[in-house]
Length: 342
Image 1 (tube, one colour):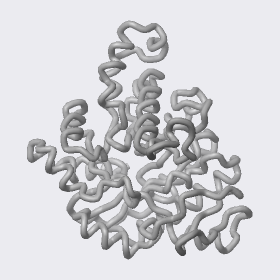
Image 2 (cartoon, helix red, strand yellow; image 1 turned 30 degrees about the vertical axis):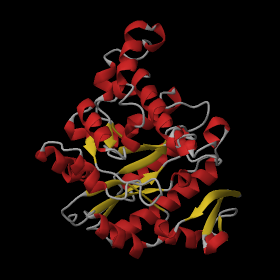
Image 3 (cartoon, one colour; image 1 turned 135 degrees about the vertical axis):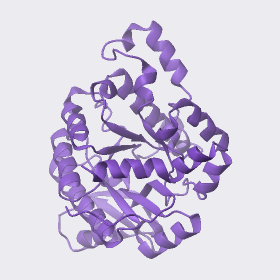
């Protein structure tokens, strides 16, 4: 891939989802059986992936580039790192369908980056529940499409955890390529206690991230791959607040000692974590738990639970001024530069 022009100077949003309009056009053209677009209520559209109707319907900002750019101007965001709507990571699909949809998605995200190289960079998607497919999708995302890394589900399946030996080739390849791996909770239907009060988002999402991070720590993944870059969204979920409990557990419980040879804290402090805490005091707490260079601004655009004013969230945390600027731009710019220098 040829080098991209420099990005616009200013705040960088590392957590911004997209469904490329050009991808929907490929669905509508019938490029692959059982992938299509249907009309939903209120004039909105929904996608069918592998024959399965996916909800909720798409909001306009997920596909409309003019609206996205206007929203970025309102927020004061200079650059977004685009990531797929997590459903486009092939969740629940068979290997062939998953391979097709992530390749199509990654190609279209890369096309948007090339069309607006001063405003966007991109993450692709990978289906971790098909480890061999995920490795190949990662390679193509980085070497063919010129993306910074990939987004993957915190919970590939109910039985496949992130420290599973089946995923070791994926983590090794991500480390080798210098990829940023953004972990994002899946968006499944609400069940049980999580079906009330929107808790599948408010509680389950941060819980999924905490569990994923704990598996990477206790399973020794972060330790075995010291150059692996993992981005945890939603302020790291409950993981930063629960760090002391993990440390205590590792000190006294034999179940935690199989793979992890060093300290919980050393592995935890390697995570890159976004600012989507919806709380200035929460962000200050996060800043106290991880190195300042590991915190990056995010929004979760364009969902209703996105941070609508991310610059204010960061500034109201009242971090030292140099660290504030690093969170807004410098830390993400450094990560981008490291990938693009390879």
